[in-house]
Amino acid sequence: MLCAAYPDLCTLFSVEFGDGVLAVEPGALLSSAEDLKRLGFDRLGMVTAVDYGEQFEIVVRLHAPEHHAAVFLKCRVPRSEPRVPSLTALWPGADWHERETYDLFGIVFEGHPDLRRIMLPDDWRGHPLRKDYEDPHVLPRPDYI
Amino acid sequence: MAVVDSIGRGLDAAPGGDVVLTTLDALIDWARGHSPWVMPMGTACCAMELIAASFAKFDFDRHGAFPRPDPRHVDVMVVAGTVTKKMQPAVQRLWDQMPEPKWCIAMGNCAVSGGIFLHDSYTVVRGVDEFLPVDVYIAGCPPRPESLQDAVLQLAKKIRSESIAEGRTHRADLLLPEAPCEPEEAP
Image (cartoon, rainbow over all chains, first blue to last red; front, side, top):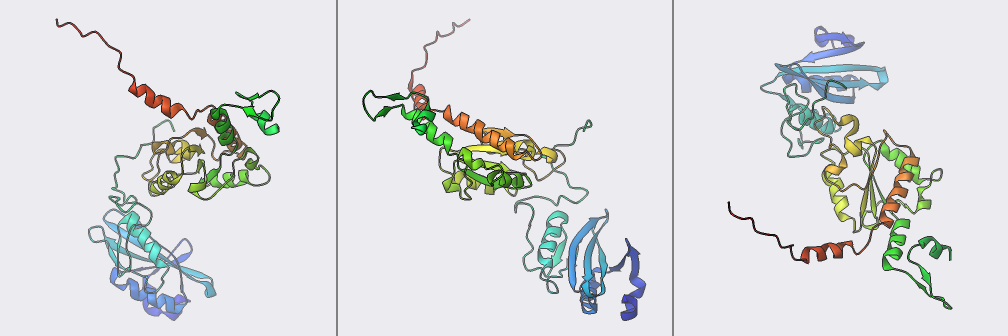
C-alpha cells in the first residue's frame, strides 16, 4: 500500500518484526513524517532511541488506524552530534516522548517547545540509558543473585 | 463506660461520684492510639493493597486508621510503593506538612529497602528510611491488606507506650551537670 502510494520511498523500506521500516536521514525526518501523516499514518505511537555506540538511532512508531498498519520511522545520528528535528509541530503528543528521549539518551530535538528533563530531577547529570553512563551511587548486583 | 474501660491504665473512679481520675499520658495515648489517621502515600503497586485495606472487605477504619488525602489532617504516613529520586522531595514535603506527633509506616519491599530495585538502579531511593523516620516496616511484594492491619495495630501499640513527657525529661537531662571526673595524671 505504501509503495503504491509513494514509489519514491520504496527503496528505503525494509521489514522488521512484520512491520515496515523506513530509514531516513536526519534532515529528511520531518518531511517524511509529514508525508506519512498525509498517507494515513496519522497516529504517533512512540518516540524512542537506541544506543549503537558510534551512532544513536531515533525510532518513531506511526500507526495508520484506518488501514490497520504501522510503520517504524528510523534515523541515525552521530553520537557526537545527536540532533534531530522535533515532531511536535505534527503531533503535539510527541512533546513528552521527546522529552523522555532527551532525558534518558540526550538526543536534542530541535524546535521542541520545552525540552526539559521529564523522568529525572532537573539537576541530574548525564543520560542513564546511554551505554557509557556511569553513576557512583548505583549498587552493583552481587554474583549470588 | 466501654470507652473508659478500654483505657485500662492508670484509671481510678473516685468513690461516690461521676469523676474518673487518670494520667494525662494514659488519656492522650488512648486517644492517639485509637485514631491514627492515615496519609495514603501510594507511589506504586502497593497502593492497590493499601486501597483494598481501607475499603469494606478489610476495613482498617475499624482500628481508627481513617484515610485522609491531606497531610494536615493525618497522623500516620503509609508510604506504599517505590520512591524514586524524583518523587523523594514530594514525599518529604508532604511529610513536613504533617503536624506533630506523626508516625511513618513503610509498606512493601520497595519502601523498606528498595526491593527489586535495590541493585543496578540509578533512580530508586533504597528505602524511605533514608529520609523519613520509619516506625513500622511491612515486608512483602506487595503485602496483604492483613499485614497493613497488623502494622496499624503494632503502631497503635507503640503509640500507646509513648509518653508526652519524654520531650521534657529529655531536655531536663541535658540541664544536669556533667559527672565530675578525675583529671588524668600527666605521665
